[in-house]
Length: 256
Image 1 (cartoon, rainbow, N blue to C red):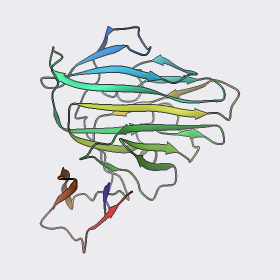
Image 2: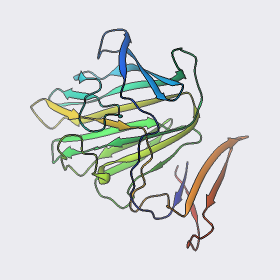
Image 3: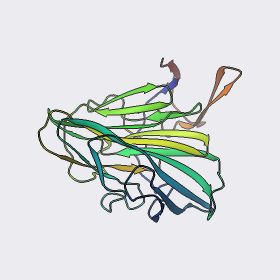
Image 4: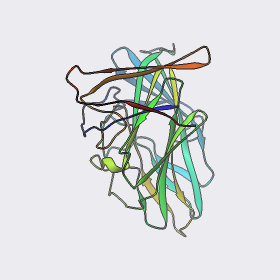
C-alpha cells in the first residue's frame, strides 16, 4: 500500500452518507444474521447493514444509539470481563427500495472516539482496505496505533484516555479510511477488556465523511485529489495539487 505524506489542518462537514433512518428487515435484532435497511443514505441509495459476526463475550446492547452524531452508525457494546472482541458489520449499498447493488465511487468512513481506559480497556476498529483505498489521521499523535493487513486497515487505542460519551471533537482518537469503486464494505468495532474483572460498556461511532487532521498524511488545501488504481498487477498513483501550493516536494512511501 502507498501513503502520500504531507501536512494539513482540521475540518468537519456534513456526512456523505446519512445513517439516521434504519429499521430491522430480517433476523433477530442485535444478533448475528440481523439485517437493517437504512433508507436514502444518499439520494437514490439505501444501505443494507448485516451483522456478520459478534465475538464470544460481546453483547450488542444498542445497534444505533442516539448520542454523538445522529447521521452516524453508532453501536453500543458490552464486553464481559477478560474479553477482547468485536461486532462485524457488512454494509451493502443498493438502489433505493431494492436489493440491487450500487457501486459507490467513494465511501469515506471515519471511526469516532477510539478511546480507552488506562491499563484496562482499549478500543479498536477495522475497515475494509480495498485496492484503491487510502487513510488519514494525526500521524504524530500518540493515542492510536495504525496498521494494515490483507483486506483490512486497523486502528487500536494505545493512549488509554477515556473521552466521555461519543466525543465528536477529539480528533486525536479518530481515523478515516476512504475506499473507492465498491458496492460493499465491512467494518469491525471492538475493544480489549482482558485486564478487568467487570463488564465494559463501550460507545462506538462510525461517521461516513472524510475528516482533515492536523499532521495528517493528506495536505489541504494543497492536495485536491489522490487516486490509486490497480492495473496489470501494478498500482498507478495520481494526485492533483492546487496551482498556488507551497510544497517543495511530495514523498510517496510504500507500506508492506
